[in-house]
Length: 269
Image (cartoon, rainbow, N blue to C red; front, side, top):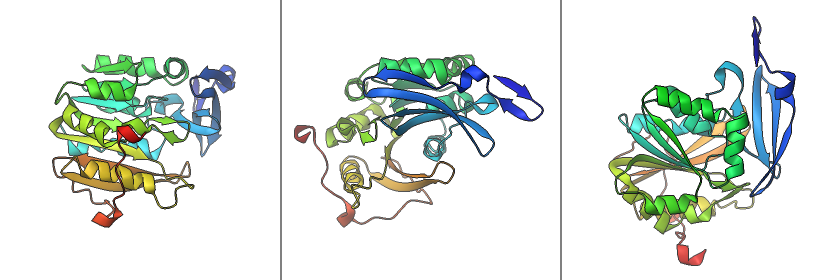
């Protein structure tokens, strides 16, 4: 990478696209430039999985929903240990490494090829060093996220972030009532769960969001839904927050009991 008085310029090698075989198919890593920002994209099947800014801002989350995950630290100011399920380009763990380096973050990614991609093109190793120097730790766990959740020690985490997809399809084993019960057990008494739900044009009634909300309402004392609109990258995400402690999010979308759908269960997957 290089810099000048006019900003950051990637090297010719950094501009070259790369194709890597992953468990969910061929992944393409390519670099774009828009609105005076260089950005590297990870996509599979034509679907953006993650991204990173390049240059001095490489630890900043490029997507609005990743930045919204940072609200964890408003809700649990003294958070010491986080669990993030779904690594991808490790955008949110990189944010934690830069802004909250004393925290221990366990990141679960099931695909070793994706972890290699993150190390090679998405600054994962640099983020690990940054967090270690700040007194924390960024632990990369190559495993099935649901198994890690089921095996977690009680009250181990102050926050659990669920952001696992196969291309554009959410991992349903992480959205069942049993998965939410496992997350509840793994959280400290004032801990918070965040679940990223992407609107689906084939699901105009938001059935999946309603099922997620139903499963969480049955498990946690407080559940709130927010909508994050990404004007720069043109997209929307629902972030569902759940905790036994009050949330009181000013931008929460009110919902009544009849909004809730049928919770998913392991036995029906």
